[in-house]
Image 1 (cartoon, rainbow, N blue to C red):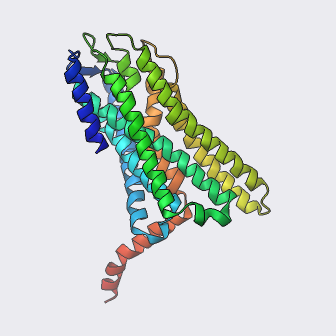
Image 2: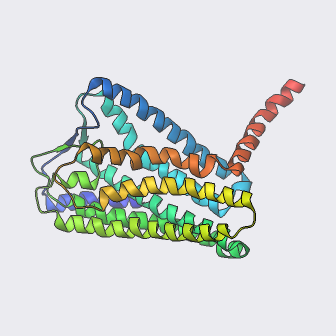
Length: 331
């Protein structure tokens, strides 16, 4: 519903202002060399297939296995779904553009891409913060975990995450699409996002940049601060544990989580929380690759597939599938 609301909102703004003369954009992509594009196509295809497989597997496993019906995996299922949408918004188009000479995207297509990208990306930011809070309660307040992380509390936190993503997406999209775009339609990027689009605007972008910066504080700096505080408390609690094995396990998990958080938030903050420049360089595009392509692939691996509960669910699912076959062979 939010998705269609944003589309209607964007089209209404464009219709009322009647300022947009650009009907399509040309994306320069990551490389102009044909051989490099073929190699990048293969690399991005492998990454995208791994992203689909890992995140779909997590969604299916958590839905089917009742032992995974816990708050942590409830949030992981939301994160995996957001990652699926986030990656699918950009990577299929990038794969096509690696194989064609003219890399174009319509203004409407660019608008939809921005809307979905911001909605799912900002939701992921909020979900990562919620998941760190869940781990904080589990480690630091284990006796109160069941009373704090109730089913309805988890539902409210998940809905709040998606609502915050929708709000930030609405604000950033509205401010970006209301600007006039005339003449220059060449985007030195491999997909549409506000910082890249603002460089083509035919009007002053200061108010839009300030709005995007303010939303970045809300959805980037605030969640990452909560994550750091949560993990600091977790580390302080773990240090006091008597079990060396328990400390090693928690530190290993926290280290992996913080690595993905640092990769995702670091690259996103670099893209959205610095002064806008009229020139998009290769470093900016490489940074975007990390949070749009690489992180959605890493999340199911680091958050889930290294987990014993998930491995157990995979074995149970495999045994369930092989059960009838083995039974027939026995007869």
